[in-house]
Length: 234
Image 1 (cartoon, helix red, strand yellow):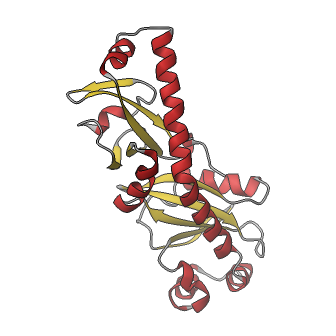
Image 2: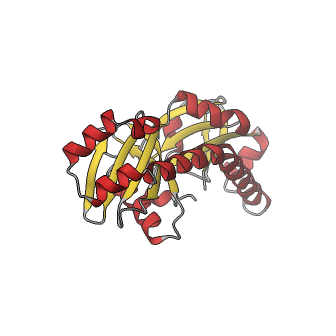
C-alpha cells in the first residue's frame, strides 16, 4: 500500500521525447500534443509503479515482521524507555534481522525511539503521515519515499498488534544500487525530489540539470540535450 506523494518525496521517472513531439508540446500546442504528453506521463507512472513494487512489498513485509516480534511487543507494552530499547535493538538476537535498518517507533504521543537513521527527517511530517495512514487503515502496512536530511529513504510502517497505538517504521536509503534496480526494468532516468531540490539520480541518461524538473512534473523541459518529460511515481 502506497501513501500519496503529497506527504513525501517523489520518485520522478524521466523520459526523452522525440524532437518533433517535444517541440509541439513545448510550443503550447493543445489537443493531440497535450494528449501525447499525458499519455507519455501515464506510461512513465506505470513503469515506475511496476519497477518499485517489489522493493515496497519487501520492506512492508519486513516492517510487518519486525512489528510482530513478541519481545518487542512486550517491551513496548511495558513502556520501556528509549535507552533500554536502544540496548535491545543493539544486542538482542530477535532484532538481528532488522539491525541494519533505520528504525523509528512511534505512538500517537510522538516518537518513542529511533535508531540508525539521520539526526533529522525520519521522524518528521512525512513519516507521521505514513504512521497515521497505517493506524487509521485496515491493519496493512504502508510505504513511502521520504527525505531525511540530505538523503532519500524508502520507509515502511506497520502496527504493533501486541502494543496498541505503537507503530514500527523501517527505512532503507535510496542509494545508487536501489535506483539502478528500479531503473533497469523501467528504462528511465530516475531522480528523487521533495518539490524543492533534486536528490539522488540514476538509470538511463537524463537531462543535464535534473533540478530543472523539480516541481515541473507533467511539463516538457528543454535543455541542451533535448526535450524531457518527468512524472512522479503513483
